[in-house]
Length: 142
Image 1 (spheres, one colour):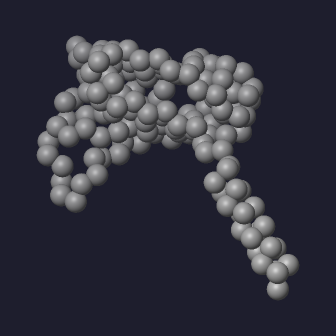
Image 2: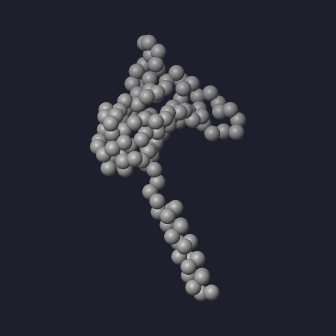
Image 3: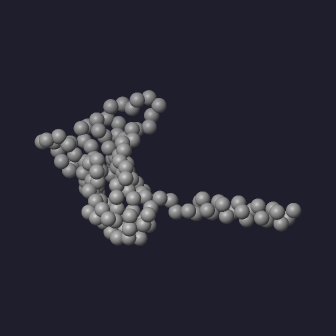
């Protein structure tokens, strides 16, 4: 009986470590308050080859501004954009006009190397304000 209890405890501890100790996918998030303080933000991230990661940036399309649909990737042999979506603010009721949401890009690390990713928050029509906010990310794939 005692050996069964030890075995159950060992298996449970191994499973907990497997789930709790596993590295979480990399993610980068920048909030509206960050862009209000500094309109041009740069960050760095390291990811293993083969992994995916997300970049989440504050966005408020009700103002006419939007982030570029496709991120500019300097070396597309190192990194590929695989998704981009807008996430509305969470609320049981429709959020009031002007409530910011988030835009989320998902990237796949293809091979070892380093590349720069950049996005621009602009009013996309002709004559609209360009580059009001910019975000640059140096990605190192290990």
